[in-house]
Image 1 (cartoon, rainbow over the protein chains, first blue to last red):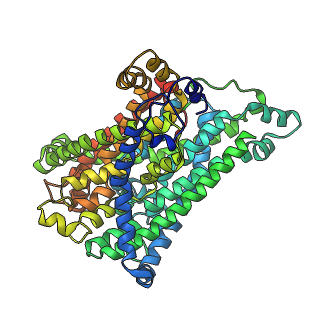
Image 2 (spheres, rainbow over the protein chains, first blue to last red):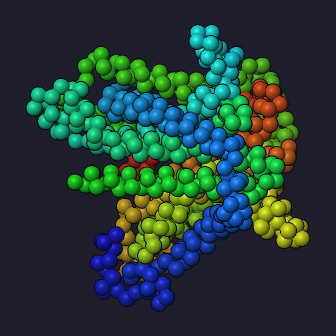
Image 3 (cartoon, rainbow over the protein chains, first blue to last red):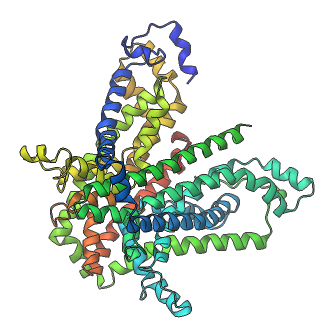
Length: 295
Length: 286
């Protein structure tokens, strides 16, 4: 945004006097109008309602808050949500990396369709994904019946089913964060490694993988964060047994249905705090990525 | 996302045919299992009892009401976020001011909030036992378990879509064209309609497309504020849930298949936009 200021020296500032304290001068009009609208809309739709959540949880008091949150059922739900999201994100880190690699480095028939299809979990409504996965993995479903017959494995209505749904929902994140970085990776480094006698595997391990690691971790964290909050695709396949396969968002819904507003708010606040910690870690990660990239 | 033509690979970057085959097979098997099979199963289950049962499930009054409600909610929520997205990206991309990074973070906030919490906050605010509940009741206004609540929850979850697409795009384009127009005597509005809008139209369409897909498909947030009144506050995803829980699988998958088709159309239009106008869309996106 440095380029914008060149003409400011010759042209007078047309903005209001109060706002000019806040911003650098510019000839373009509409700053006050658009910023005012943006802040008002943001406050009404996002900030005030989120404040209501904090207020409701704060109404419980410090000990009341922890009493509402530190129950075996809530703790079990946190364990289920965080543990299985972590597992699903790990699966996506491995296979998402392979998908990104294949899409960038190889050409095969239908590769562009495959590339477009990767975004399906973003576009498909979660409830549709939920019923489709639960029908597929049910004991009489296409995949569920095979797993039952071959391994005696039950997937639907168990924690494993939750992990499947979370894998579906988190799939695009790793692919879409690794893909552009891999695309922009200069081939010279790998060529240099090869010229210096490195095998293909060595140059992957020492040259390519370290360059992609920050993107891979970002994708992993995004998939993880999405999994923790996911509701629609999970509840159909989960079985929803308290303490075993009950996720945090469902617990919040159950508390609401029992008119335990304060309890729901307390669990919600704890979950939000956990997500924000993740977001913070993610921002630090991206800052690290940029500093490595800039070199 | 995909480069239009394969990068000219040097031998140093070529993997052996064996490695290449194995990796492609692994990737395709993973995507087949997790993406293609669920998608196909929606249509197979929907048509299990034939096309007559399929159509019957879609023209039944509650399904029609759900489809109508979904369209109404999206028709209110998407234009609201469109207007907001344009305003927000104008002030963020065209001006330098203090606190800009904080503002961008706050705009992205709804993406990191669980859908259930997105619904919960409005129940805490406007519900019968919520902060403003008694006041709203005395005024005879109902927000939760009614259409306004559905719209609010949908606006919240789709809040960042347009803004997040337009901000990087407008930042990339800079201010020179607008400044030229103003110097030549155009008014602010003329500059926006004649200069800025034509520059961002494809990015805008892209953002609106994704915003609309999410608005029509949202489940968690609207489920919390809806109250699940059949024929009144059930959107299509909620109607799918009710039918599924009643073991009316064919009808559930029939309605789900309409949503799946919406998702496919969204993907196709999105891909076409990326192929044809890739340079005119924001470069940074995941």
